[in-house]
Length: 184
Image 1 (spheres, rainbow, N blue to C red):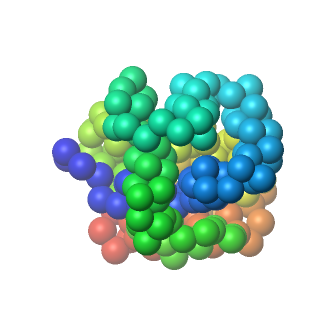
Image 2: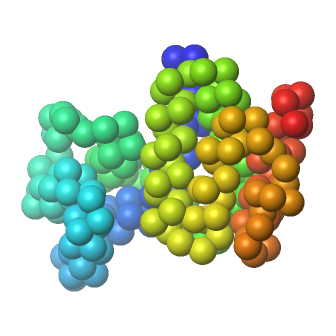
């Protein structure tokens, strides 16, 4: 599987708030202080490469060379910011609460690819699980369920243990998508 469906949009959606904040701060210097605070926290949490590039963008750099050396997730974030600065219509929609209906199909497609042994899907699931763990709460619990799901373990009652309504809804959406594919 060369390209995972909807993966780029999943990344854009997951990081919509950051993308929108950086674009807004580039357009209005009064909005930079909160973004700088956010970037300091992100750097402390292991996002140093991305933060360095975002600081360059905030400083006025706009060339595609900024993408060199970034992993896929960071590249999608930076590309989205650069495109959004040129054309605001390309920006992702701001996200309020996570919409399980939007996330479930993408997660399920990656889980299916991982079950089939796609190394890119396995790596991406690991990265997604790690990010979800950092988010805490229900997202951390859903992230913890991604590994078992990729190995074919899909007992909803075991997987949803400790989840609140949002986590259970997202998990059920993923399980429903897996069922549509005939693998649940």
